[in-house]
Length: 124
Image (cartoon, rainbow, N blue to C red; front, side, top):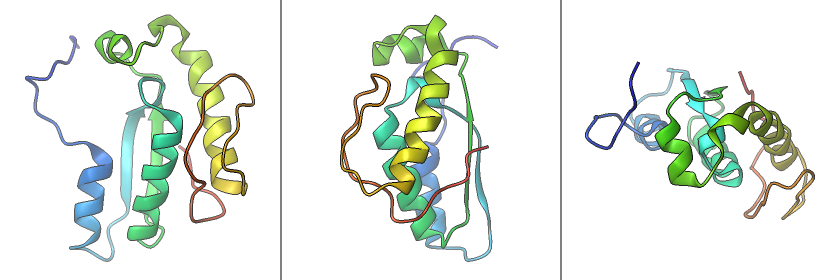
């Protein structure tokens, strides 16, 4: 698999799932593998929580370390630290989904935004 650039067509999963939530009531939405380390943790927490609410709890968040170094460069992240980063991110996601805190930084990840609407989401 080669690098993925803006010329390649794909749909951002949270946007697509938000749309589909309005036109279906039984489908379960699964991100096969969301490259979590190349994304902002608090934003993913918020988007996943919103989609989960919109779908009535039908979101399953599948995450992976990612393979496209271009994504990491764009986010200012070290591609070779993605394994450590995803471990931290999963812990932070769970914290944001279960606590009533507004901000936190347990291991150096900068967080902002609000916690999710529920008691926790499934991370695959």
